[in-house]
Length: 109
Image 1 (tube, rainbow, N blue to C red):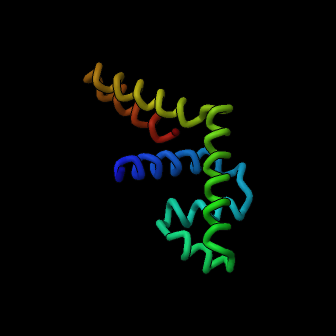
Image 2: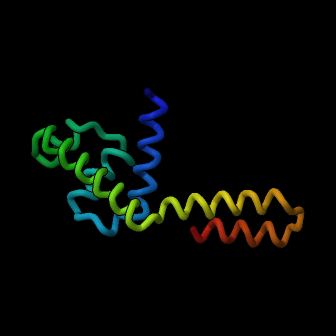
């Protein structure tokens, strides 16, 4: 169960990185505090002077929205595929110049 929570948090952090520009300020603030700053629902609710349930509902809806963006745009999936190919290519060569270029490519992502 704990690993599933960690996996979900990591996934949401990546989706947030890719799609945060499509979110409202409120959605961005809640997700940032919840996933990146590891604040509890109660802490977020207190900060924004809303109920814990309101925070939970907003985060749940925003999670679903990010997943919907990913289904439609696939930025995270494509990022993972590129990373896998780069890793495989680095393992296939000892050419230091090529490895350096692949590392530069990784940094662009």
